[in-house]
Length: 160
Image (spheres, rainbow, N blue to C red):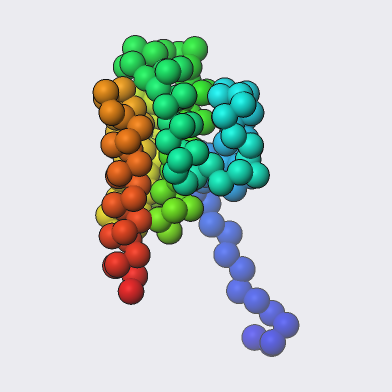
């Protein structure tokens, strides 16, 4: 094989894996979070702000709790897009603050995602659907902030 020849790989994924890869694509992630900040929770923050860190992230979570913080509202079909945006927002808080990476755990997606389960992985792996459900707790936003802070701390320790 000459220097100018390359071995190419044509990787095909099953439909469920491809659904997650499409969902987690950076341009789609950014678009959904922009919509969450601009339309779902207007006047809370701009995408250019540092929305993934307290105190702004806490205020955003508190506003989300008002919008769909009880389990009935959280799982209501009419809130499906907003909750998806919120889950993306949460995941990006873990990614940006803690250096965690997006991963797929299909068994953790239900009842919101049939084909995949959004999760973040660093020192450990965390289900974003389960974490988002914590929003309904009386101190939900602060519990989630603590979870993000601890995950970031343990992930940084595991890397060094």
